[in-house]
Image (spheres, rainbow, N blue to C red):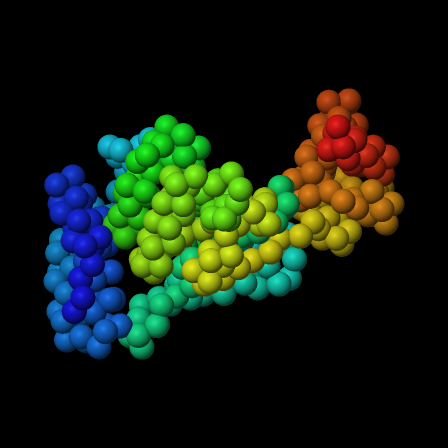
Length: 326
């Protein structure tokens, strides 16, 4: 069986840190890799060893589990959250939702796929305008898979660690192999910009080349999610490194109204003309319509009124559009 240097280092690092769960996670990834390579006997033996080691701790798993936190150098490279938003609570275009649900299905059935030498979707590229739900989608995937969301601090990678960025990226992908989670590279164009761009420098080329190599061999047990508001800036070589490219558009009037309805579900909206509201949503992002709905709700509540009027929402939507035009 081919054991990668990343897996060996991850095993040693987890052992040194006393991170048993991380150690077992890497061991299970090695078992899955062995199964994909046809080493089924070895894979089964390794799984049984891990399961037997974890068995005595079954009772303790009923107690609260400490939240994972980036340690050492990783603490300056990424932050961790445990999102409470689910995919079912989001309002997304049908094709986007379908692709995200496919990701969840394959990740949940990754062991079954591994038995047949297949990997689940685990590298996503999300493209679209600001406020269209890209980062929230990453959070929802983490929530629905019951794993942490690690957000990589790209500004630190490209400024604080200038000259060391490729090495720091290796640390991040060591973590991808060691700890099952969703890893979000937000504002990804910071490192994924076209290598032939006029303002390109040697460091930027090295960083992008390093990312291409690392993501190619990223562990399929974690999700690597890259998101950008500026897809036109991305190097075209990136696209083929991702299993799924998902494009987010501004919501149409039907989706926008559904977003507002969900956000105001606890208030009385019986007097609202939704057709009139729909006419005011053109050109606004998901985030825009949510903020407009919240602004209208707060205005009604603070004035002691019990029911939202159509004018409350249309005024808030127009104000949101003006704010975006400034």
